[in-house]
Length: 219
Image (cartoon, rainbow, N blue to C red; front, side, top):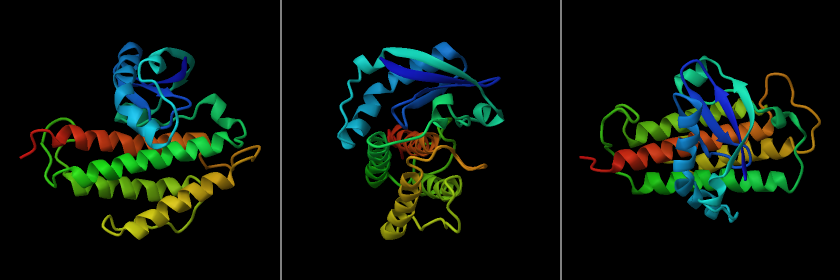
């Protein structure tokens, strides 16, 4: 059984798997959000495989809703924005290693998708008019901002064609996450480490899947 929480906004609901960072989908109501989460199980399977963590895309669709959260305007805008209750609990090894493995796997999937995608993507409602490189720039800018939510200061958005700079940003995020392992509480204004990994992995995968979808029949 997969523990799932629902983040319920006024116009949008996110269904997120607690223990599978990045496996999080949304729709206009709870039922459709859970259906969307189930539909993406086969697309999440390569992420788990990249992290070398067993994942059955059929069995893992057996959901148990363990918590409902009140969403925000950000929820309705299209991004998960609320930490689950269990995210406040201290994080210890080996869970932390598993979280890092799945976050790194999400990044690896994004990198693979980007490397194989055309520069110009199919236009339409799925992502609007941004092409591949603009999406990558957006993800990197967001990750530099997310790092500040882990207590990092002075992070700059790396150039997307500078793999060493991108790797340095990701390493800083992982180091900050690992530095929170064992802490009894999260400093004010920062994200709990579990939520941080879930949000960062979701963002990377959401745009990886967007690029995949919009690469089909691209001009």
